[in-house]
Length: 463
Image (cartoon, rainbow, N blue to C red; front, side, top):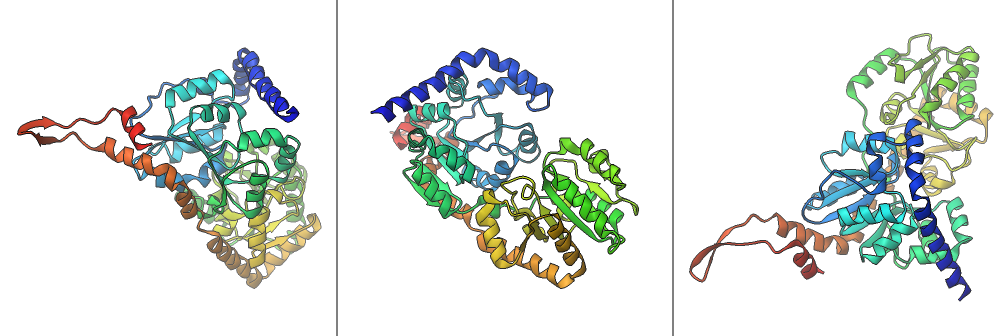
């Protein structure tokens, strides 16, 4: 009884807090827009307002928080679209919106995800009327979940994962977690551990489908940019530190300085996880006496360049095609790790620190193949980079092991589509029916035009 009361109080306090704070949200978002964290021209979308029309026929709402989640479901989106089903894709960041515009504008309708407050969520759902809601990985918004449940719209998690930190937080609110996660019709987790955690938190129907990020194609690169940079680099030895966090760039610069004596033509590519730190990083490298060129300024490395700073978004495919050695950051000075699949797909021997909890299973499988070397500090990083620059055979073996690891991990897309089959089947029928042109038919000796069933009657019949 007490737990039920506490859940009711927590849920209603959350809803009430959102309602009371609603008038303050627009100034808050306006301030975020001034810092580049929101799209000023599209702030209304965060309140559930839009100028876009809802298309006729079935519509699936897919929410992907940011760039990584969006790329993970690119193939899933295309598979669903192939059935004639409309896709409404929401994301929460400016960078992800830009990515959708560049790569998916002909495939989906994009909106910023509404704030998890009653007026915004209600307005959003009233307009779009989704037939199915798919959440990528795990973004749990109590108001949205409750409102979808009230409207009897099935909610599914795909590519689901729960980090150690998130799981620990949910365990402190286990009763609330059970109330929320039990409302998902299906959870398709990345790993056995993720599956166990979802079940522990109250999800009723959980399966393991694997990681959709493995089934996506390698990140692309602009051909002209790649040719230009490759020509500028020439035959120089190259290694890269990618997705780096504060402190890891200093380690990479120190490695470069220490190895210049042994590898006189060495070029180090550094791609920070947050490019807005580029000015600070350029100053840091210059203070160490290193020559820096920046991608964001259109600069090309020359023979004297020590560090090429990849301070752009969405060009990881370009940077990784310029090297065969990649240290993956957020693993030494920060915790959690970053996804190693992209360097594995694009032929790089992978180095990482010890703190990779968010991608534990992916690293485990790649490590079993021999594709990853774990370094416990800057000195070990220096030694590993030196070895891989010097030993072509070891480097080639790690690269081949990465390819093999990716091949063995594929299959999540097929398993995910299989899991979605029962939820998509009625929408596929509806899409086909609504797509039929009106035909001239014979009825009781008279020529008449056949009419479509009203959309709401058709949905009712299918269900």
